Image (cartoon, rainbow, N blue to C red; front, side):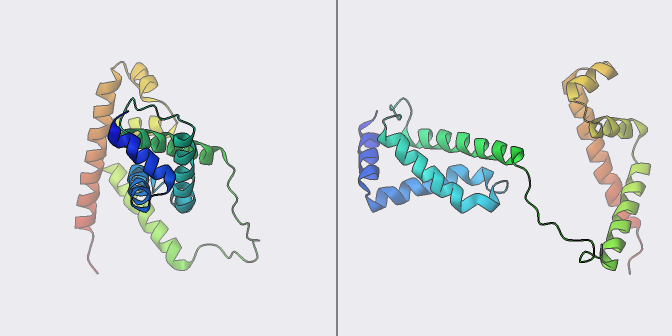
Length: 183
């Protein structure tokens, strides 16, 4: 372990405010890529990461094989991924609203949904049949490997085809939107 990291760990465990602030900043920066997926638990997550790092450093799990900053980034990455996985397994605790209180979509919501559906159908009509077949396979939950086997091509080639189909769909959408009458 480098002398700088050894001193930083010691100051952090002693509660040096400057070092604690620096380490908290490292924690937040390392967790930032996961923020959107963990937004509802963000503040709690940062506190738990801080406590986990403190326990880890106190117990001597950091052996100095990498820099302290790298160790923190790895610890945060693994913890965030574990949290995301646990959220997927956790049943959703939504509030059930009785039907009498839930009158359904608003007239505006229905209109917007109809417009979106119409736009989607128009875009699909303008994309090649091969693209629609690929998307149907994806919507059926097929993996790229399975799709590639079925189509007799390599998975990498298939990924490129799907990307090109997506680009064609985006271009078709732009054309449809530009042709739409302005009100």
